[in-house]
Image (cartoon, rainbow, N blue to C red; front, side):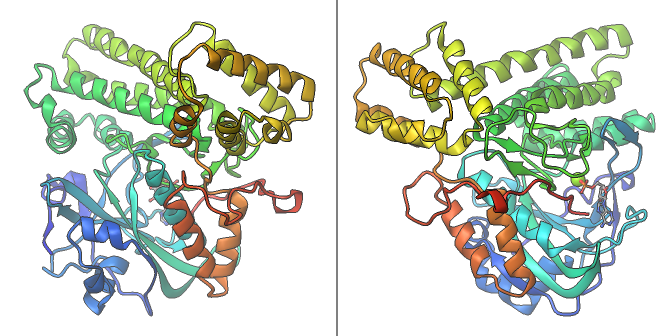
Length: 484
Ligand code: AMP
Ligand code: MG
């Protein structure tokens, strides 16, 4: 196994070398063998003492240091000029068989010069949550960082009480964030902004290398990837929970799974995150917040876009304007797919929004509604769908209108049901299931973790495992807590 040092070799301001400290008794809870194999990392080696040292505290076989990456960020709207990897490290890059580079990054691996008042560690609960949710996102086909391994450290960390510590080893196309650009912009360091732009283009957007205005081309590309990403989140009911600019990836991958959650009942105003008391990052706010973050990226890039601020602003604004269009197209075509509509008709948006209004009013389960609609297409029987609604009359009228709309297309029920089943998952990682996994893991029982991650690895298949069931009243999770 060869680990590169591409990011670590950038100028000194970009990162700080770390002396990592071994944990008392690290142990692997979950190892993502298919991902490891795809990256050319033999799973058996990862389980060896050398592999464990690499995964838990970043000890590279070649003796080079892992690094903490520098970044800034707007946290809940307030700018913090220096955040950085306070409990994380970039171990290095791995080159896969296709030649693509992947970051190997650890979270919970110990203090760094960016730790501020934090302890540099992670509790096991959030580590397992990130593993479960990021792998579920990948199985749903949504761009995301991946979980390579979840580990216990054999050491406790102090949160509200003493809890077991953990480390997540994750893989990403890059860990450069909107906040990385803001870090250099805040220091007026245009030279570093240019180095960073070139680095990101080389790594993530090689087609842009020959653009006349590379900074502008990069902004446009990130706007596009983020617009598509957020639409994909919305279509599965995902709430990131803490969309600060330091948690927004330049690669357009879902990153930094903290107090994230999926909708059970449909509610556009839904917030789970305990730290988000004002609902800034509620489900329905996510497109607006993504665009707000991209505005901060645009600001950071302005001097690289054009030395004349007015023309830079004009060009950046035009790039940002594309967000709504790309988001809207991805979102609408995603909804058509979810409802089995194969052609485009003007009235489709009304059909979609009428359903969402009913779902909201009757607190219908988001995932179940669409999965049961797939079955209704196959059997012609909508009675299961109706059980999700209180107002039977209104739901019946909608179902009839929908069936009427479907009849306008010459598609067999079987073909349509199949097309719907590959976009409407049977299961998503529900909060109460994640909580149950974490509770069991706290007492050393990892079997529920393995059962849930296995089921979520094929979310579109039918199975009789009970994971499709929404929480009972007493199981409902009202708040999720940040990983800190
Ligand atoms: P997050 O909200 O988890 O994305 O983290 C925001 C910032 O706080 C990042 O700079 C993290 O490195 C830092 N941070 C979070 N938790 C800790 C911790 N336990 N120790 C040190 N730094 C932390
Ligand atoms: Mg973060």
